[in-house]
Image (cartoon, rainbow, N blue to C red):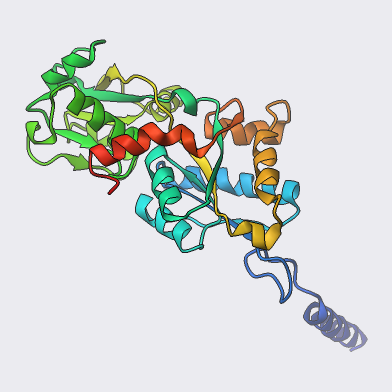
Length: 305
């Protein structure tokens, strides 16, 4: 009987203690009067699990460096990322070249602040299923031999998976109507790779970094698919910051975010992991003007009005 009384008292005590305990901080739902979280996002160009892992680690780092809560909000597609930035639902977004330009045009005074070391000289690759019997080539003029093939791009708004590959095709006399059937849009670089690897499409265009990463990870069946051409370089991915953050966090906040990104150090294991997930050695400064070529090409192919 005594043991039962003691046990009952202990349970009541623990229950009361649990009920009175203050809940832990919730970055997504801060208490009234608390600083609202900085919301980051990214174009969904890769496998969602990969993106969730990457941005989970990055938001922890940024929150510590900036001294404000930082959260990651995934979006359904490239257009949704631009829309969320325009409406102020995303503050800091990892855009591709084209979507970054679209965002900057829709949100005056938004600022491109950082890119990876590889983004100033980025490339796309054209890949082909081996059954298509397309041999690798080095001259852009040889894109002519892709006429009559089944081709897929990535997302319709992808710089490396659609815009620049389409530009190089058109520059060499190949129009989208020259392919067999409707040109495909796979939605992501990983999906493009799988569609060509399976033979659903004979040819595909994707981000060269994703191709090399998947090769290194052993996720490419090289008996089924190969690179046939790599494009000349261009500016691509970059971070864009919404101008409204200055009202929330101070006029120097853009500079603070830029410094935090540029300070990611490959000598620090946790930070190296973030850089590795981005496929970069480091981040470097960038500016809106660097994407003038992307804007011009976007207008030329009808992706920017």
